[in-house]
Length: 330
Image 1 (cartoon, rainbow, N blue to C red):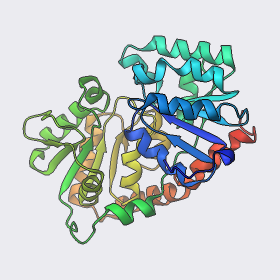
Image 2: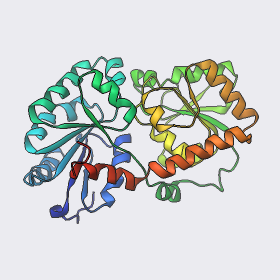
Image 3: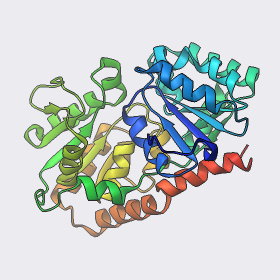
Image 4: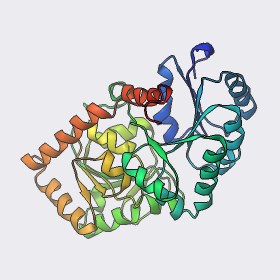
């Protein structure tokens, strides 16, 4: 975070419990003068609380706690923050199914009580999740997320070095067993094994060898972009998903996408390919690999690209949040 940012001009304070995927998504907002992003609560907690306490004196500041599920650094301080800020929001970056799969339904109940006690609001990254959270008694506000892909591409993607398409990839961003299950890596393995494509496939984001015959590795952001850019297909057969950032990058690089037909993917990947089972996934992957230049596939890739370019921009992310300030969507 910039040391020179004028605290008096800040309207949005973003708190992220650790510097992982969600921080990568949120941190670019710091390029706007009225947004301040604080990263990991896993270190320098005292210095961060000093900044928070100073900003809490301004009753017009919107404090947004981006919940990634870290019990130690998120759930232990949420009520304390709700007391400090008149305008306090919890941004849930996962679906209700995520809480259920990880046996954390009590956390949803606690958040519900918090919203009643302090009149705080809950933000979510997909309109598709609104009905699901309402089922658990939580009223939520969808926010349009977005990225500055021109800047990312300029820094990270080396098209000259990686011009030949030769990979089929999936992404699992944590080594934890439950998270691998949530991301559907077992489904990906079954799909790839059945089609005998192990030598052409990679699971990214994990240091552990998850399945025999399929390369599994954790890579830098630069290598991730370069591998994605030379991929024949990006596949994510998640069991639950709120917003798939890797799918956004795949859309912008015009890589064919196959995802499970669930919650956030419906809002995230509007034009295909969303599948309900492995049979559908096999059929589509065979089609992509045998005839990637077909009019049908090209049309879907282009529609996903244009939709992402129109909606999923950093400026739209900012504007969606600023509607909170104007009370237009409360």
